[in-house]
Image (tube, rainbow, N blue to C red; front, side, top):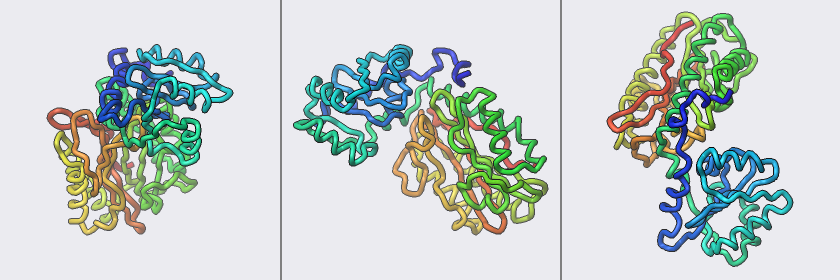
Length: 374
């Protein structure tokens, strides 16, 4: 079952109008670009609903053409129709670069925008040769600027993904008392998310116990979870292409005084950061309030990563929540707040929620309890 099957049609992402929004924001502005070639597959999906593993999308002032290969003849047509997207579909398995060149030239695209951050050097060289005489113009974040604001349908899917992750954790958390290995517990959590309707996991689930919890992005290993461990779980569910993201830290048995303080300080820092999320707030201010609380506890150097990031079709996307972020939050942004403290001799603590910025504040999507012992 697809995880979005439980959503009403009105709660699904509104894909149909996105090409028009891209045209109005990029094409014909100051005469710099009269077409844009979208090669990043996540952005192709965002604009058309197409989920294949190969394809490029040419968007002009009055049309769009999706070029893919024969594996996706039926799938591409069905997905474009389901999304309500008007787009010419070109299937080419033998010489895709030649066909792409023909399509670009037939569109009279003299100034062709490219997604600069996603085009490898080798691809750029081949395109320069194939599109001889066409001015290739680098663009940056043209589609991401649209993606950063989630519509009601996108938020409905992301709420479903977050709920699946919450329910999965509730289903399996008691297994920590059985002292599984990190890998064993991670497998149970991943399976529970799929069983509850997730299409996949958002990323490789982190299960970090004992000394491993002092490594923020530890990969689950064969270590057996033991009494006295702090255990960081960082995980999410993928539903209809959209991610959820959450971290919780459990203590196996009663925490030591230093572990108890770590848990309290991180929980207070996370709550302070989350309470600040809202429209008009500078993302770096959220980072600052989390760091201030942790620094007051004497652990400034033990908070070794950014405070958060945007979430959507990518697990990490704009806006970034960190010291050097220049983002200002706006309604429709979805961000995480995830401070942590990592002490090699005691383990680590990270608590993370995903929040949607609303008109008058924020809504927390991840609802699992915090500060829990097993």
